[in-house]
Image (tube, rainbow, N blue to C red; front, side, top):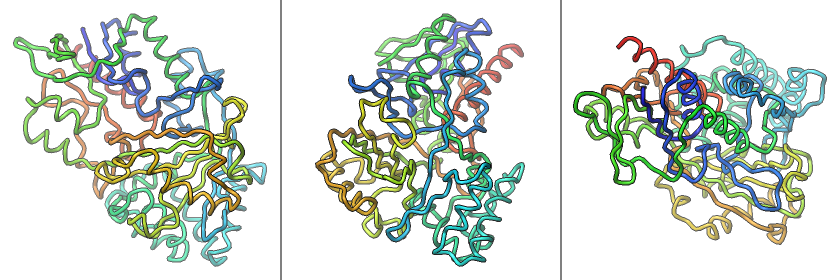
Length: 448
């Protein structure tokens, strides 16, 4: 078959790998200047490694992406350090995943016991509930409950009000109390203390995969956004790219559902409504290069709980503070100490309109809450990245809302991060859904 894939992120690259190995003629169209999608990175000339535009890591349970890296012969480039993740509360930082014991489970227990703002019995209950939830084999049945209500009942009000509810507010804003419990189960189920990265950064992994695809004959067309998808007379599909029409037997879109609805206006109206009704948030990441460390306790990821969906009422104007160089050595980045100030927001939020200078003026003063000595003169350089589609919002009974991978338009398939539910977005599930879509496309071809 002659197959087109829209989007050269992890899903598109993984699907192309399987389709090309099966002997199909595959063309990848990517609107950006590099492969990678939301996992793409950039590299300063003084750096040996690239840095992700939006913070990324793998868990040791991310078997799909690790298996694909094995297949292209690059597993030796995967690294799994054990960085520290922590929780900020009223001026204090409490480690949540600090390695203090030989086993990760014992370390987690010790760290939970050190959450002194929670009464001791509630700490024990909080730790036990988190462990039990993480061990449920299949938590999809929990999607009929909201995470906010279920965790408050299970963990107790004290722990819930300190940890879970503020994290849900920080993550999902005004919809924090509508997100279902199956999503939180999936997060706890897959979480590991060891976090994986790739030698050279995620962009290096994606480029290694792209090189493997080129070796299989895949054409990767960068800076070439698809403008329209339409059915062809007599079967197949026509893509309009840079004003030219190209015909294919099948097309896989790895875009957001809303973008597919715009690209394929000939889709049935009820299906297009299903696509556009799926809720999601965008992402904003302000990256700072400092001349010295910010979090001197070694924290890599600092959760910044929120009291209100209104950011002006919270201690921090963003949801996560990530010191990348407390995870990957600054020696790979010319000795600079790299900080992410990250947030998930509705695409119409003012953070998508403010300039880099205006966002920096909002964000930088908050860093003194973490390190009172911080001064803006520490900042050597900064970068701002924004993406309008970065975090699906899974409501109660979300599985009933999701479209299948096969669309009603013959030959057109969709593999988006919204469809990896109950798992969360990330390269592991992008690889899984991309390969699953490829199998479905080939089975449809065989059946025909």
